[in-house]
Image (tube, rainbow, N blue to C red):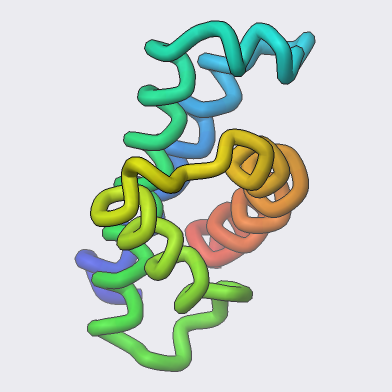
Length: 111
């Protein structure tokens, strides 16, 4: 595995772990909604994940991460459509899709 590939995977892993740290064990959607700083921190980490995924795809268009293109599209939407970001969608992504991405990234890093 290329050194750059490892770096981008590591960046994704760090951002996922940061999101999990920010949200804690309780993962209360109402607390998330009420805390603008928390929402912005999660969004920023998703931007980093999307940028790292984009760079991975530039190195290998068939890199084995499910929905890599959608991850990049989410990053672009958060950055460029900041006024249309739906907290419910972000919450769903964080709770339903990030655990899968985390497993895929860890599997790739361990190869």
